[in-house]
Length: 308
Ligand code: CP
Ligand code: NVA
Image (cartoon, rainbow, N blue to C red):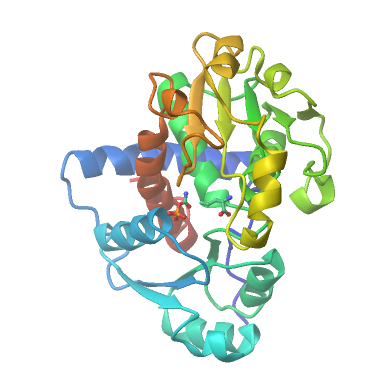
């Protein structure tokens, strides 16, 4: 029996050493891409991308990335596959993983992707679940490293919902040794167990978003209502009204602070236009880096630590 494949289902599936390898590889893969140097280590490999929720960046970055590495990507969604008609996820995993080399899934509960992975012969990547968005945090931390160097010891202010992005920042802080100051409205607080935290003291909670931002090196936020929670839209719009990242919050952060948002963004809701379109915002680099970090991720999951 072959050994089980490596998966990337949540950020803490990778050690600090593995993440550092990925960030170093990303820099190299990105430089090659920018210099128009063909690099096809995944020739003849196939990626299946399964989407149960909408996507622009995740779909495009995985599809373009696999093509650029010499492989092929196939898009599947629940509307026109048997997955949407009640085929058990375990059966789908058995079949799909006999036909492709790698699978990326965007779905609802984390439990769904865990069940798929348990029955998959090939590596499975989390392209967003209700609980986590590990590929986005790979890109965000790589963007930080490009702009400012190591993230160790730095302070990230998370303003808004304790959602999949927030949970993943918190996991990353425990592995890479930085701090996250979280401010959420009452009733929307972080649930450490759901976030998958071990409790290393890298997370502090603040009632006042201004206090969470004070002195922070990076200020970040996300939509007030994530995909799958649309029924709560109205209640959330009321509850989150004071949790908009605006110029005042950026002014109390470190002078050199960066602003990040995974996108898509709602100007005038979770972020003021002046911030996301302002000089401290690196959101377009962040989005572009989805492509480069995921190319390094796919290379690593299929070929291990490539050094060339
Ligand atoms: N940030 C992100 O995952 O974007 P998409 O929903 O467009 O994939
Ligand atoms: N938290 C958001 C992220 C979208 C990329 C959501 O889950 O909808």
